[in-house]
Structures are given as structure tokens and as C-alpha cells.
Amino acid sequence: MAVSLNTIRKFALGLPDTTEAPHHDFGSFRVRGKIFVTIPPGGDLLHIFLPGQDRELALAAHPDFLEPLHWGAKVPGVRVRLPLARAAIVKQLVRTAYDFKSASVPIRRPGPGPDTIDGYIEAFPPSVQAILQSVRQTVRSAAPQAEETISYRMPAFKQHGILVCFAAFNHHIGLYPPVSGDPALEAAAAPWAGEKGNLRFPLKEPMPLALIERITRLRVAQNEAKASRRRGAKAR
Image (tube, rainbow, N blue to C red; front, side, top):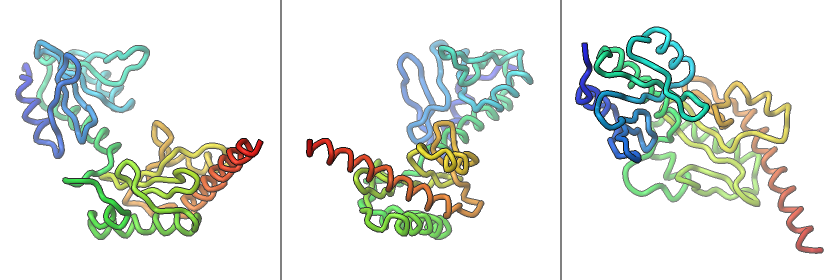
């Protein structure tokens, strides 16, 4: 049975924080600015952006109305032929894409962003506040001379530049930037590394505070080394 674009539009826009906006010549559905579906002109096709395993399973299960969505050499999702598709399957795929994208976007509160880390943390439920405070105190103990700030609407510590940033997501705490420059520490952090190397610590699991402390100490040493090199260059 054919699926109408309006049916999918109604479903997608019913998901929290979803908006519809143009994307070049296409339409798109976005969750807090991140695109999870695009709509080519004509209304008969839908492009749904899915993580690898979900994409491959969908393509294998529904070759009658799904095909790979090619983006250069990459295959970031599936192309849906709506006249041949089944509404329940398309909705399921849209929801999977939504969940995947929303998990990669920090939770934003209405209005202007916070000016302090206290203000950022206070916007969350008590259970999440406690986790954020534990991360904050861990970073503080590892970098006692660092200055607290807000960077890109996220809590951050800086000392000769940004050391680390962290943020609350729907299902995890994110820590930035990716770990580099210490192979042993990179290996220790690997189980929590996302596609771009940024770390994702699930809210339902204990925070690996000892790991966060090690990462912060590494970042302090790295930033101090960069600052020392800059001072040496100016002295010459």
C-alpha cells in the first residue's frame, strides 16, 4: 500500500523538537538542527539517514521499496520509494533516524544559553544534575588552575585554551575533544568513542570518572606544552 508524504510528515513532526525546513532543493526534517530525513522534489521519494547496522538490516529486509542512498563514496542512509512502501516500516525507519540524530545533539533549553556552568546544570532534572556535577568536580580536581566557562553553550574548562567540554544528551554525557596523543589512554577510552572520536558515557551506567580524570590531566599537559612552545618562539 502506498505511503503518502503527508502521513510521514505528520508522524515526523510529532516527534519532540522536530522541525521542517528547506535543504537546498529538498525539504528536510530536523531534530534540534540535525537532519534525519530529506524530501526530494516530487513527493515520491524519501531519504532517511540511518546508522550502519540499521541501514543494512533495512535494505536486506525490504528491497522492494528501499535502496541504498549514495552520497559520494558513502552510503549514509536509504532511499524510500513511497508508492511501494508500507507506512509502519517507513515510520519505524524515520523513528530510528530521529533517535540516532537526537542522541548526537546536546539538549538545548528555550531562550538564551546559560552564562555559567551552574546555570547549565540547574536546567536539568536532579538525577542528571548529580551526574554533571560529578563530571565537573572530577575535571576540577584534575585541573585545579583551570577556569570554568561556557563554550558553544556547553560547560568547559580552559587553561591555555580549552581543556575539555561536556554536555548532557538524551541518553548520555558527551566529553570533548577526542582523546589523542596517548595510545594507552586512547585504547582505554575506545569503548565510549563515537564516530568522530568524541566520548559518550551512557546516563544509565556509572560515569568512568577515573578515565575522565586521566583525560583531563592529559589535556592539561598538552595545552601546557603548546603554551611553552609559543613562549619559546616569542623569545627567539
